[in-house]
Image 1: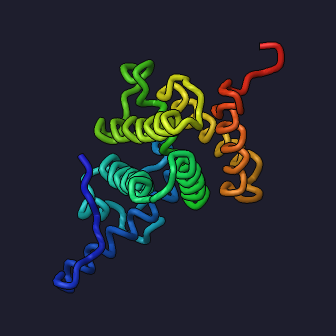
Image 2: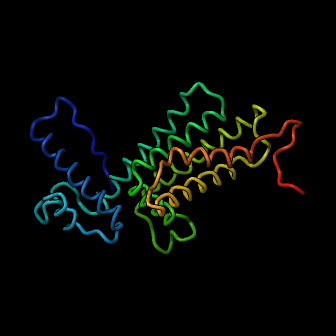
Image 3: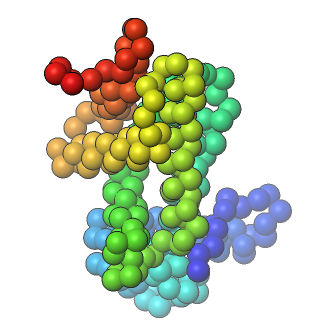
Length: 227
């Protein structure tokens, strides 16, 4: 089970604010350790040491390492969800909204690369093919949100098809492919030492992907020579 650790409202007591501040220290320490060493490679004692807490005192704030991890996952999912929510408010056509979303996503992953890499690994572990074998530390509702977000991308592709911009292909399949391309580009950027900007690389991703979806003048979709 996880729980939300929120910013303190003005009516919190001094004791409550102090407790919340200590929880934040523990979460920051755990986030760094999880990102660098992985979940299994991190111990509660290491989290305590990194946050300058006494051994065992972590349990005054969190019941387990898993609760700490799930709390961090909740935050990451909430932050990404905010990006998808913003798309609904943008007064743009479907293609422009899709471009905006991809750039915002890749900028977020650039700013949170280490933990985003860990989150991506956990989502892969939660796939149906290996879930029974290894289980998952991500709550089912978070996996469902991931699929809902992919559905938002599919809806944008369908809207662009209705607007006569994209060719008629399976929008859900195209959305899944786009997310795979984004993940591959993020990991490639990480392997290359995080040189340059992911936001800039997102333009290449968008140009390659979206140009493949667009309808040529005359009504036919772009296809390789000879097809």
